[in-house]
Image 1 (cartoon, rainbow, N blue to C red):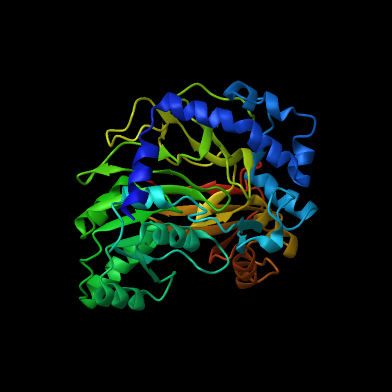
Image 2 (cartoon, rainbow, N blue to C red):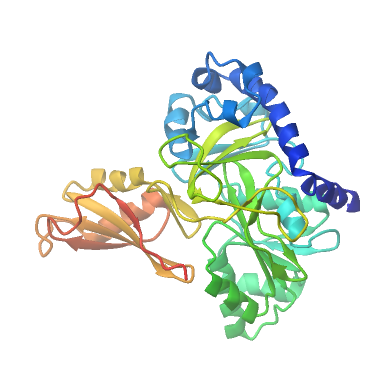
Length: 420
C-alpha cells in the first residue's frame, strides 16, 4: 500500500509544465473516444479531434452544463448517450437528485478519492466511518473505492441513526469521519449528550455542504483537530481537495490530477483571467464517462502560486456559490424545475420562491407561495409541504403570502444562508 501513496506523491508533485503538456497530449484521444458515443457524437459532430491540442482549442468546444443532463438523459436514457461503456457492463447505476443518472465503472478508485484521503493522512491500518449515503447516490461508494485502494477499513455507517453512529465510534474507534459537516456536528452533539467517548476521531474529510470557518473552528474545539474539505460531484467524482502540513490547513483546494480546469464567465464558455470568479468547468479523462467542458454550475476562482504542502497542481478557492439557481440543501441539489413541479401540482399557488436560510450547516428550506387569499387559500399547507418533500426528498416549511409579495425578478430559489 505504501507504493500507492508514493505514486500519488510523485503524481501530485510533478513539474506543472510537465502536467500541462501531458494533459494536452491526451486531449485528441479523449475527444475521439467521446465522439464515438451517440450523445457526444451529436454535440461534437464535425470537430477534428486531432486538432484539439491546447487550452485555446478546448475553449472552442461547447460547454455542457450539469443543468443540461436531465434533458439529455430524457432524450436518450439512461446517460444521454455520453458513456463509452455499455450500461449493462457498468458496475453501478445511480439516481441522483434532479433526477440525474450517474454511472460507475469497474476501475479501482473510479471516482479518484485516493488523493483527498491520502491528504488526510489515511493509509493501511486506519479505520474510517463512512457517513455518506449508500442509498441511490454515489458518495459512499466514492469513499469505499479509495479506502480499499489505500488499505483502510470502512465502517459503512451511512446517514441517520445518530445514537448508533455514536456507539459505532465509541466501540470501533475509527480514526476519521467522512461525510457532511452538518451530520458530524449532530454526531458530536449526540456524543456529548450521551457522555460517549469518540475521541479516536481525530480527523474529518467533509463534503457536499459549505464549511464556514466558524464551523471548522467548532470541530477543532470539540476534538477533531484536522478537518479538510473535499469538492466533488456525482458526475465528476473528486474535483479538488484541501491539504495540510502538521495539522495546519493550507489555503485553497488542489485540483484533481485527471481533470483540466477552466473558470468561465457564467452563462458562457469564455475562460476568465486567473483570479476572477466564474463558473467551474472541467474536462474529465474518465474512460467510461468522458466529460468535456462540463459546467458544474459552481462558482470559484484560481489562486496564484503553489501550495505549501508541496503539491504543484492548480489551486481554487473552493465553492463560492452557484452560477445558476440550483442550490444544495443538506447535501442534496434542489433545482428550479422541482419548484415548478410543486406549483404544477397545486394550481392555487400563483408564484413561489424557495428560500434556503440558516447558518452553521443548519439549513432551513421554506417555500413562499403566493395565493389569491392567504387567509383563506383553499389549499392545505400540509399538502404543499408533502409535495415539496416528495419532489425534493427534503423536508421544508410552507409559507403562504399575498399576491405581489414576492419580487417579480424570475428567481425561484434564493440562498439566504450565512456562511460566516
